Image (cartoon, rainbow, N blue to C red; front, side):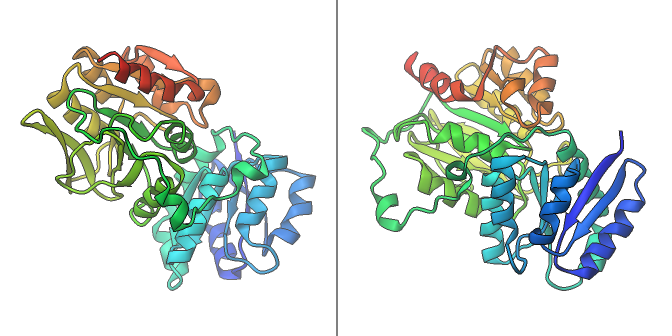
Length: 354
Protein backbone atom coordinates (compact mmCIF):
# COMPACT_ATOMS: atom_id res chain seq x y z
CA UNK A 1 0.00 0.00 0.00
CA UNK A 2 1.28 3.43 -0.93
CA UNK A 3 0.78 6.06 1.78
CA UNK A 4 -0.56 9.39 0.52
CA UNK A 5 0.79 12.34 2.51
CA UNK A 6 -0.40 15.94 2.45
CA UNK A 7 1.88 18.67 3.87
CA UNK A 8 0.66 21.92 5.42
CA UNK A 9 3.56 24.27 6.26
CA UNK A 10 4.01 27.97 5.61
CA UNK A 11 7.72 27.56 4.79
CA UNK A 12 8.41 26.99 1.09
CA UNK A 13 11.83 25.57 2.03
CA UNK A 14 10.22 22.99 4.32
CA UNK A 15 7.64 21.99 1.71
CA UNK A 16 10.29 21.59 -0.97
CA UNK A 17 12.61 19.64 1.32
CA UNK A 18 9.81 17.34 2.46
CA UNK A 19 8.81 16.71 -1.15
CA UNK A 20 12.39 15.66 -1.89
CA UNK A 21 12.57 13.40 1.18
CA UNK A 22 9.23 11.70 0.59
CA UNK A 23 10.03 11.00 -3.06
CA UNK A 24 12.89 8.77 -1.93
CA UNK A 25 10.62 6.24 -0.22
CA UNK A 26 8.64 3.80 -2.42
CA UNK A 27 5.94 3.40 0.25
CA UNK A 28 5.09 7.12 0.40
CA UNK A 29 3.79 9.58 -2.15
CA UNK A 30 3.21 13.31 -1.70
CA UNK A 31 -0.44 13.91 -2.51
CA UNK A 32 -0.12 17.67 -2.24
CA UNK A 33 0.89 20.59 -0.06
CA UNK A 34 -0.38 23.98 1.07
CA UNK A 35 1.11 26.98 2.89
CA UNK A 36 -1.72 27.26 5.42
CA UNK A 37 -4.92 25.52 6.58
CA UNK A 38 -7.24 27.93 4.74
CA UNK A 39 -5.81 26.78 1.42
CA UNK A 40 -5.47 23.16 2.54
CA UNK A 41 -9.04 22.69 3.79
CA UNK A 42 -10.87 22.52 0.44
CA UNK A 43 -8.13 20.32 -1.01
CA UNK A 44 -8.47 17.85 1.87
CA UNK A 45 -12.26 17.81 1.56
CA UNK A 46 -11.89 16.92 -2.11
CA UNK A 47 -9.47 14.06 -1.44
CA UNK A 48 -8.43 13.03 2.05
CA UNK A 49 -4.84 11.79 2.38
CA UNK A 50 -3.73 8.82 4.45
CA UNK A 51 -1.60 11.09 6.64
CA UNK A 52 -1.45 14.83 7.23
CA UNK A 53 1.94 16.38 8.05
CA UNK A 54 1.09 19.62 9.82
CA UNK A 55 2.99 22.65 11.10
CA UNK A 56 1.54 24.56 14.06
CA UNK A 57 2.60 28.18 13.75
CA UNK A 58 1.12 29.50 10.51
CA UNK A 59 -0.62 32.71 9.39
CA UNK A 60 -4.37 32.90 8.87
CA UNK A 61 -5.18 29.84 10.98
CA UNK A 62 -2.76 27.99 13.25
CA UNK A 63 -2.32 24.27 12.88
CA UNK A 64 -3.81 23.49 16.28
CA UNK A 65 -7.13 25.15 15.48
CA UNK A 66 -7.18 23.36 12.13
CA UNK A 67 -6.42 20.01 13.78
CA UNK A 68 -9.28 20.44 16.23
CA UNK A 69 -11.66 21.13 13.37
CA UNK A 70 -10.49 18.06 11.48
CA UNK A 71 -10.72 15.77 14.49
CA UNK A 72 -14.25 16.89 15.30
CA UNK A 73 -15.45 16.42 11.72
CA UNK A 74 -13.37 14.04 9.58
CA UNK A 75 -10.34 12.71 11.52
CA UNK A 76 -7.16 12.28 9.49
CA UNK A 77 -4.05 10.62 10.99
CA UNK A 78 -1.83 13.63 11.68
CA UNK A 79 1.87 14.06 12.41
CA UNK A 80 2.94 17.42 13.82
CA UNK A 81 6.22 18.80 12.48
CA UNK A 82 6.95 21.93 14.47
CA UNK A 83 9.64 24.00 16.14
CA UNK A 84 10.28 23.31 19.81
CA UNK A 85 10.41 26.71 21.42
CA UNK A 86 8.73 26.72 24.82
CA UNK A 87 5.43 27.93 23.39
CA UNK A 88 5.76 25.63 20.40
CA UNK A 89 6.22 22.66 22.71
CA UNK A 90 3.09 23.54 24.69
CA UNK A 91 1.14 23.80 21.45
CA UNK A 92 2.51 20.49 20.24
CA UNK A 93 1.33 18.84 23.46
CA UNK A 94 -2.05 20.46 22.91
CA UNK A 95 -2.01 18.94 19.42
CA UNK A 96 -1.38 15.47 20.86
CA UNK A 97 -4.27 16.03 23.25
CA UNK A 98 -6.41 17.06 20.27
CA UNK A 99 -5.68 13.79 18.48
CA UNK A 100 -2.35 14.10 16.63
CA UNK A 101 -0.57 10.76 16.36
CA UNK A 102 2.96 12.02 17.00
CA UNK A 103 5.29 15.01 16.95
CA UNK A 104 8.51 15.46 15.01
CA UNK A 105 10.64 18.36 16.22
CA UNK A 106 12.33 20.81 13.90
CA UNK A 107 14.64 23.75 14.74
CA UNK A 108 14.17 27.34 13.61
CA UNK A 109 17.60 27.34 11.97
CA UNK A 110 19.16 24.77 9.64
CA UNK A 111 15.81 23.32 8.64
CA UNK A 112 16.87 21.73 5.37
CA UNK A 113 19.84 19.90 6.88
CA UNK A 114 17.86 18.88 9.95
CA UNK A 115 15.03 17.39 7.92
CA UNK A 116 17.47 15.44 5.79
CA UNK A 117 19.28 14.15 8.88
CA UNK A 118 15.94 13.20 10.48
CA UNK A 119 14.55 11.52 7.37
CA UNK A 120 14.34 8.06 8.94
CA UNK A 121 12.47 9.33 12.01
CA UNK A 122 10.08 11.34 9.87
CA UNK A 123 9.30 8.51 7.48
CA UNK A 124 8.70 6.11 10.35
CA UNK A 125 6.34 8.60 12.00
CA UNK A 126 4.34 8.88 8.78
CA UNK A 127 4.14 5.10 8.36
CA UNK A 128 3.07 4.66 11.97
CA UNK A 129 0.39 7.32 11.56
CA UNK A 130 -0.94 5.59 8.44
CA UNK A 131 -1.66 2.50 10.55
CA UNK A 132 -3.41 4.45 13.29
CA UNK A 133 -7.14 4.92 13.74
CA UNK A 134 -7.94 8.42 15.02
CA UNK A 135 -11.41 8.87 16.40
CA UNK A 136 -13.68 11.91 16.22
CA UNK A 137 -13.08 14.22 19.16
CA UNK A 138 -15.53 16.87 20.30
CA UNK A 139 -14.37 20.45 20.56
CA UNK A 140 -14.57 20.18 24.33
CA UNK A 141 -12.41 17.06 24.38
CA UNK A 142 -9.89 18.40 21.91
CA UNK A 143 -9.45 21.77 23.59
CA UNK A 144 -6.44 21.93 25.85
CA UNK A 145 -7.16 22.48 29.51
CA UNK A 146 -4.60 24.50 31.44
CA UNK A 147 -6.01 25.13 34.92
CA UNK A 148 -4.87 28.25 36.71
CA UNK A 149 -2.88 27.91 39.92
CA UNK A 150 -5.90 28.23 42.27
CA UNK A 151 -7.68 25.34 40.52
CA UNK A 152 -4.59 23.17 40.59
CA UNK A 153 -4.19 23.92 44.31
CA UNK A 154 -7.76 22.73 44.90
CA UNK A 155 -6.80 19.15 43.99
CA UNK A 156 -8.25 16.68 46.54
CA UNK A 157 -5.59 15.76 49.08
CA UNK A 158 -5.09 12.00 49.55
CA UNK A 159 -6.61 10.72 52.76
CA UNK A 160 -3.32 9.16 53.83
CA UNK A 161 -0.25 9.98 51.72
CA UNK A 162 1.69 6.86 52.69
CA UNK A 163 4.04 4.65 50.74
CA UNK A 164 2.45 2.14 48.41
CA UNK A 165 4.70 -0.65 49.69
CA UNK A 166 3.19 -3.63 47.91
CA UNK A 167 1.10 -2.06 45.20
CA UNK A 168 3.14 -0.29 42.50
CA UNK A 169 1.50 0.15 39.11
CA UNK A 170 3.63 0.39 35.96
CA UNK A 171 2.28 1.59 32.61
CA UNK A 172 3.75 1.53 29.11
CA UNK A 173 2.40 3.41 26.09
CA UNK A 174 3.46 5.03 22.84
CA UNK A 175 1.46 6.19 19.81
CA UNK A 176 -1.89 7.49 21.04
CA UNK A 177 -0.74 7.08 24.62
CA UNK A 178 -0.85 10.73 25.60
CA UNK A 179 -4.63 10.79 25.19
CA UNK A 180 -5.11 7.27 26.59
CA UNK A 181 -3.04 7.96 29.69
CA UNK A 182 -4.91 11.20 30.30
CA UNK A 183 -8.23 9.34 30.21
CA UNK A 184 -7.00 6.76 32.72
CA UNK A 185 -5.35 9.15 35.16
CA UNK A 186 -8.16 11.70 35.25
CA UNK A 187 -10.52 8.88 36.31
CA UNK A 188 -8.44 8.05 39.41
CA UNK A 189 -8.86 9.57 42.89
CA UNK A 190 -6.12 11.52 44.61
CA UNK A 191 -5.16 8.60 46.87
CA UNK A 192 -4.77 5.98 44.13
CA UNK A 193 -1.70 3.73 44.21
CA UNK A 194 1.65 5.02 42.96
CA UNK A 195 2.09 4.77 39.20
CA UNK A 196 5.26 4.79 37.08
CA UNK A 197 4.81 5.52 33.37
CA UNK A 198 6.93 5.16 30.27
CA UNK A 199 5.40 7.10 27.38
CA UNK A 200 7.54 7.33 24.25
CA UNK A 201 8.00 11.08 23.90
CA UNK A 202 10.78 13.49 22.84
CA UNK A 203 13.06 14.79 25.55
CA UNK A 204 11.71 18.34 25.60
CA UNK A 205 8.11 17.23 26.04
CA UNK A 206 7.95 15.03 29.13
CA UNK A 207 8.25 17.73 31.80
CA UNK A 208 5.52 19.83 30.19
CA UNK A 209 3.39 16.73 29.60
CA UNK A 210 3.63 15.84 33.27
CA UNK A 211 2.79 19.42 34.21
CA UNK A 212 -0.26 19.35 31.98
CA UNK A 213 -1.50 16.09 33.49
CA UNK A 214 -0.85 17.44 36.98
CA UNK A 215 -3.30 20.24 36.27
CA UNK A 216 -5.95 17.78 35.11
CA UNK A 217 -5.65 14.96 37.63
CA UNK A 218 -6.53 14.49 41.28
CA UNK A 219 -3.22 12.66 41.65
CA UNK A 220 0.10 14.51 41.67
CA UNK A 221 1.88 14.00 38.34
CA UNK A 222 5.51 14.93 37.73
CA UNK A 223 8.53 13.95 35.68
CA UNK A 224 10.44 11.25 37.54
CA UNK A 225 13.69 12.12 39.30
CA UNK A 226 16.32 9.66 40.41
CA UNK A 227 15.55 8.59 43.97
CA UNK A 228 11.86 9.60 43.98
CA UNK A 229 9.77 7.44 46.29
CA UNK A 230 6.73 5.70 44.88
CA UNK A 231 4.04 7.27 47.07
CA UNK A 232 0.28 6.90 46.97
CA UNK A 233 -1.35 9.67 45.00
CA UNK A 234 1.71 10.18 42.79
CA UNK A 235 2.37 9.46 39.12
CA UNK A 236 5.98 9.52 37.88
CA UNK A 237 6.52 10.04 34.13
CA UNK A 238 9.79 8.78 32.67
CA UNK A 239 11.84 11.74 31.37
CA UNK A 240 12.50 11.77 27.64
CA UNK A 241 16.00 10.60 26.79
CA UNK A 242 16.42 8.65 30.07
CA UNK A 243 15.36 5.21 31.25
CA UNK A 244 13.09 4.74 34.27
CA UNK A 245 13.32 1.71 36.55
CA UNK A 246 12.06 0.80 40.02
CA UNK A 247 14.12 -0.56 42.91
CA UNK A 248 13.03 -1.74 46.34
CA UNK A 249 14.81 -0.86 49.56
CA UNK A 250 13.53 -1.21 53.12
CA UNK A 251 10.13 -2.29 51.88
CA UNK A 252 9.75 0.85 49.79
CA UNK A 253 9.92 1.44 46.04
CA UNK A 254 12.07 4.15 44.49
CA UNK A 255 12.58 5.49 40.98
CA UNK A 256 15.89 4.99 39.24
CA UNK A 257 16.42 7.46 36.38
CA UNK A 258 19.57 6.81 34.38
CA UNK A 259 21.14 7.10 30.96
CA UNK A 260 21.80 4.13 28.76
CA UNK A 261 21.49 2.92 25.17
CA UNK A 262 18.06 2.83 23.54
CA UNK A 263 16.18 -0.44 24.00
CA UNK A 264 13.86 -1.46 21.18
CA UNK A 265 14.91 1.89 19.62
CA UNK A 266 13.43 3.78 22.57
CA UNK A 267 14.75 5.78 25.49
CA UNK A 268 12.85 5.63 27.79
CA UNK A 269 11.89 2.04 27.10
CA UNK A 270 8.88 0.20 28.49
CA UNK A 271 10.89 -3.03 28.56
CA UNK A 272 13.49 -1.44 30.84
CA UNK A 273 10.81 -0.38 33.34
CA UNK A 274 8.90 -3.66 33.20
CA UNK A 275 11.96 -5.91 33.55
CA UNK A 276 13.34 -3.97 36.50
CA UNK A 277 9.92 -4.02 38.18
CA UNK A 278 9.66 -7.79 37.71
CA UNK A 279 13.02 -8.16 39.46
CA UNK A 280 12.10 -6.08 42.51
CA UNK A 281 8.32 -6.40 42.87
CA UNK A 282 7.57 -9.95 41.81
CA UNK A 283 3.84 -10.64 41.98
CA UNK A 284 3.03 -7.47 43.95
CA UNK A 285 2.59 -5.22 40.92
CA UNK A 286 0.04 -4.33 38.27
CA UNK A 287 1.42 -3.79 34.76
CA UNK A 288 -0.62 -2.11 32.04
CA UNK A 289 0.11 -1.86 28.32
CA UNK A 290 -1.74 0.89 26.50
CA UNK A 291 -1.86 1.87 22.83
CA UNK A 292 1.40 2.05 20.89
CA UNK A 293 3.31 1.02 17.78
CA UNK A 294 5.92 -1.73 17.92
CA UNK A 295 6.78 -4.33 20.54
CA UNK A 296 8.51 -2.37 23.30
CA UNK A 297 7.45 -3.76 26.66
CA UNK A 298 6.09 -7.10 25.45
CA UNK A 299 9.00 -9.18 26.71
CA UNK A 300 9.14 -7.21 29.94
CA UNK A 301 5.43 -7.82 30.49
CA UNK A 302 5.99 -11.53 29.86
CA UNK A 303 8.61 -11.53 32.61
CA UNK A 304 6.19 -9.78 34.95
CA UNK A 305 3.38 -12.19 34.06
CA UNK A 306 5.55 -15.27 34.56
CA UNK A 307 6.57 -13.90 37.96
CA UNK A 308 2.95 -13.70 39.08
CA UNK A 309 2.26 -10.03 38.46
CA UNK A 310 -1.18 -8.88 37.32
CA UNK A 311 -1.08 -7.76 33.68
CA UNK A 312 -3.58 -5.83 31.55
CA UNK A 313 -3.56 -4.80 27.88
CA UNK A 314 -5.80 -2.22 26.23
CA UNK A 315 -8.16 -3.80 23.71
CA UNK A 316 -7.86 -3.27 19.98
CA UNK A 317 -11.13 -1.40 19.58
CA UNK A 318 -10.06 1.45 21.87
CA UNK A 319 -6.40 1.64 20.74
CA UNK A 320 -5.14 4.24 18.29
CA UNK A 321 -2.45 1.66 17.41
CA UNK A 322 -2.77 -1.92 18.68
CA UNK A 323 0.89 -2.87 18.16
CA UNK A 324 2.31 -2.95 21.71
CA UNK A 325 -0.72 -4.55 23.38
CA UNK A 326 -0.99 -7.04 20.53
CA UNK A 327 2.62 -8.16 20.93
CA UNK A 328 2.19 -8.64 24.67
CA UNK A 329 -0.98 -10.68 24.06
CA UNK A 330 0.81 -12.75 21.41
CA UNK A 331 3.53 -13.68 23.91
CA UNK A 332 0.93 -14.87 26.44
CA UNK A 333 1.89 -12.05 28.80
CA UNK A 334 -1.61 -10.65 29.46
CA UNK A 335 -4.19 -11.64 32.06
CA UNK A 336 -6.97 -9.29 30.94
CA UNK A 337 -7.72 -7.34 27.76
CA UNK A 338 -9.80 -4.30 28.63
CA UNK A 339 -11.31 -1.29 26.85
CA UNK A 340 -9.65 1.96 27.87
CA UNK A 341 -12.60 3.15 29.94
CA UNK A 342 -12.23 0.16 32.27
CA UNK A 343 -8.52 0.49 33.01
CA UNK A 344 -8.84 2.99 35.89
CA UNK A 345 -11.41 0.75 37.58
CA UNK A 346 -9.02 -2.19 37.23
CA UNK A 347 -6.29 -0.20 39.00
CA UNK A 348 -8.58 0.54 41.93
CA UNK A 349 -9.78 -3.07 42.10
CA UNK A 350 -6.17 -4.28 42.22
CA UNK A 351 -5.41 -1.80 44.99
CA UNK A 352 -8.50 -2.83 46.97
CA UNK A 353 -7.51 -6.50 47.07
CA UNK A 354 -4.94 -5.67 49.76
